[in-house]
Image (cartoon, rainbow over all chains, first blue to last red):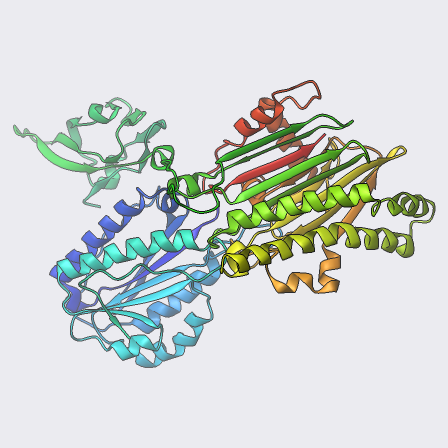
Length: 211
Length: 397
């Protein structure tokens, strides 16, 4: 079976505690619930979740939609946002997990990457070091979501041209972001037949694209 | 773990899970039962701790555990929510829809052909994939085949329109039609007649020179037909003010004829899918190379200019001279991906034996079977997870 690997990088730093992280959990549940009713996704999407705060964890190793069970997400009371370190782990995982076509194996579809954060990377130097590394991994698409007023959109734009900005990090906007991710994964899955670019659906109303 | 989560189940598929109470910090469980299991088709046996059955209802199951700890004499039962997700049967999610009535380039969802007028029989079938059915789109695959009784030539071609190109269904139709039309004429007008002498020479001295002579003849006949297919697509695109890329399609062509006690088979190949000569128990002879990229879904199409660069075009032409064969097979990637999975498997004898064993369960490949094409169409419904493309196969046996 050909897999569509989808990597989610989620900010679990102290500032996400409370309503935002609850919204992320709900968002993940609706994301998985939605994709499980889409036959394209059900037969191809494999999901991996990496959380980052002071520490970085691959809380859900790459797993098919049918059998995955969403893990519990915890947030520390306070602390830094190690996005750079998360990107480093991401690259390691992609190198290890994403299959390329060879005579003896069928390659995966190009992987998708979604990043959600409500702050600035605390490990800025590492973050900048990892940008070219991530770009060389040939993601079908990279979407960064900046939730709340504290995020520096420009820093995320160094990583990808698709940065969406949520003015607030409350449950309704975060929910709308996950809806959008669902739609992107579904569409992306279908449009890659001829090796073309991934087509993103138009963003939902609460999400502002940063141009 | 505080949350009690059971492994996911699947609708209509047998499920067994032995509950490990320790895992949920409930090693001390005493009297207990579940509420809501029967409603989704499952039962629980407290003696073995086994939850089993065939789930009938997909989605999040509503199940509650009611229990008392083994120690102490608690009066009230404690209740806990059980998390169990039942996956949807993918077959129920793949719904079928009709394309809009005013969509250009109508194409029927299935097509079959049986031609037993020659010494060998041509049988072919093509079917819209479940992805196109779900999205209310037409089939992108196409095929065409002919036997010329006057010259003894069999000509077979299959094509797969690119998923991302708007009118690729017409591209594949034009390509296959043009090739058959052109090669039928070439076959009669004598362009292929030189082959007989060339084959005799090749058999006497099989070297690069005699091989090249045959290659050149194929280049000037099969190659010309392929180029004409490209020209016809270009013309259609121009007439309708579309771009050629809108009609992107792969193309596999094969010509076959008996000379004395040998069979000659020539082929042209651009894109994915496959052309192979099968003889039971032997490694298949594959007449070309799959165009594939690093990631899934990447291939080359007839509509790409680079295809017609002479050296690379010449490499796409192959031929074989064999004593006899059980089947000559042309198929689109809907079959090769689902059946062979990898490029290397396409060369394995056991994979081909399995393929013909499976086909044999639905289709009797004998000359007197007048239903072979309909049976082959039935066979195309075989289910492989993640393989939902159009499927086309043409067999000469």
